[in-house]
Length: 329
Ligand code: SF4
Image 1: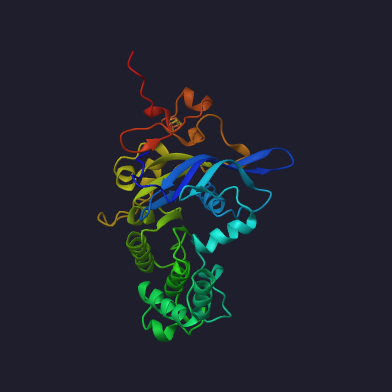
Image 2: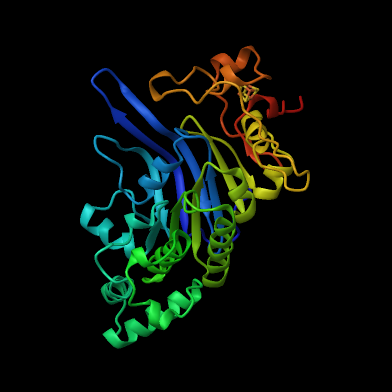
């Protein structure tokens, strides 16, 4: 993995998330490791059930019981956060880590004016007067591109379009000046043109404010436009991780190569939507060896029995036996 040179804001090491059931223990996230540097957008991408949202939920410690972190470490600016009490974690969420979800109404209360919600969040986290908090709220709304912010601040969430509401949610996420933003499918519910605006906004805010962003999406096109690095997940495991341009230009994992085929090509004016045959395995039936082997056209005998660990290459790192180099004798 090409590591960020600066101290990472977020460091995830060998993260394991499990769900005990009556019959067995299901592993939803299986030994995932990655870092996110200040000012960097790292995309977590994969099909539904790949474990990407579960990884996000683990970082903010909001896994639905009986699911729990069963192994590994999560550090925020060097400090472990995976073992904090619920109360200490509540302080971290909202202040040092903010979230942006697909549905803006997960974050916004429809009964309150957006200004009240922004001001309250600012006052909770920053030592400023109510008057300063309102000025800050207006400035944030301007920063995320809400026109006539000084008057729109007194509107209710339903008075905004979907795209504008998502901008308000992003402003809300910035209120406490967090170190890390976790954005889970932030553009999925929006029109394509609005999607592009929100992506541009997230990217700009990330580099201007030096925030780290974890962008969770099933859409490789969104990753291509937004992320600096991308981690491709499959069946709870990392398949490939690397700089986004390397992963897009020369995907090394057959699964990533398949996902790449699903980026619509605007230049060719045709959509290169390629379906990878088969579907993501259920947690109760993760195949032996490489979890992708039943769907992989390049699978060979070893793939069915031995699980590939992440293999470092000069660009992307990849969990695939095709890239194992045999050491010289
Ligand atoms: Fe395909 Fe084998 Fe590589 Fe898995 S390890 S992606 S089955 S070639």
